Image 1 (cartoon, rainbow, N blue to C red):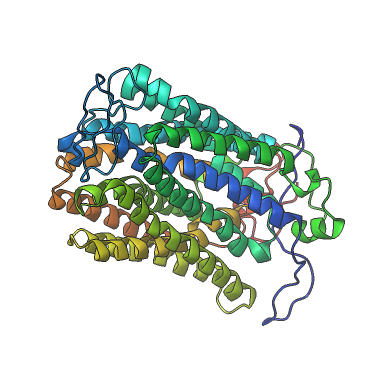
Image 2 (image 1 turned 60 degrees about the horizontal axis):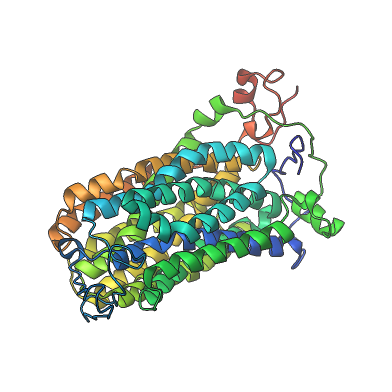
Length: 514
């Protein structure tokens, strides 16, 4: 897509009469499904690159007062290995000149390393939304995969040279490049998915976060035992990112109009068989976006949901190791189980959402409310329960239930951005994601100040109470103000010709007269 090309996303489906209790017309499998697979692949790899650090950092550190890890180093003279079964991995040539050595980083430093990714992520997400609006959604995904791959490969040497500060720089760069991941995905989904398949295909694509996390946890846990130890995780992840970049570059397309082999029939099915196209580069109606109660409530629940998710995402491996006494390899396996639940439940929620709305059983707005409430309230209850037990099985059940239920939000606020404005869905996601990750940056401050001793369950309990409360309160606001109607400013094309007053008084479904 060239810079000045812009294809407006239709706000209505194929204009064919449909009886109340019948499914809308279907096209069948086609190019759009291939594109969804590519988006899923990109999203999975992006989460793989960010997720592995939660387990990898456990293998990188050997500080007893932070994770109760004891690595017995026999020194560089005899160059032998000493295994401590309670620590969960083998130390290889653990001396200062080796990239395989472990590091004596306190909990506060580990929190900075884990959260540095989100520093770059939150900074770039706003700018990335603008890039998506101008150049389409494919370019941000390409940038994300390439930068993450290159940086990941060199990270072991960088940390050996510059310590934790250098590793933070690497993670900031990776986070910055992933700032365009969600806005780019949302832009591509709005272009490629017809309204009748929005929740189902969108949910399938969003299982990439769970899939990438599972692979990341498993991969880093297993590679911690390999001869190349934790550095091999960075190398393998880097290679996977670069392969994903090549596949997306060759087979991906920003819009149906950019795809050379899509049929006219499928293109018309996706675009709604209408002529709502323009080759102008639209202005973004910032004032109208930021004054919309439905948009602001979606931003708020995005913040609450994302903060709770990232807390689980980053802290679960440490919690399982420090409180539940699970070693590194088992921690990676058990920490992956909730995300398997997430993948399965996400598909179920997406299918049920489209089934209920396409059959006119429940209104779209009410489906969004129900799905989002399930994705907020149940995880909050599970967080409250898990902090009162040291039983591994019970804790894992709570985490599995929490992440499975959390997937409901992907048929809730996640899809709401496309509901409210297909044309500006990437911008809305960029703004919401930037705000959410700005709040995520406060997590290390919260965790490191409350959880001063990671073996103290009472301290973890207070932190989990805060997470649970924030996600429930944000959902309440969303339920009150959510809307599933396309906003009038979705058709906003020229701020010089269309005044704010005319747009604000325009009724849904009617086009503004220039």
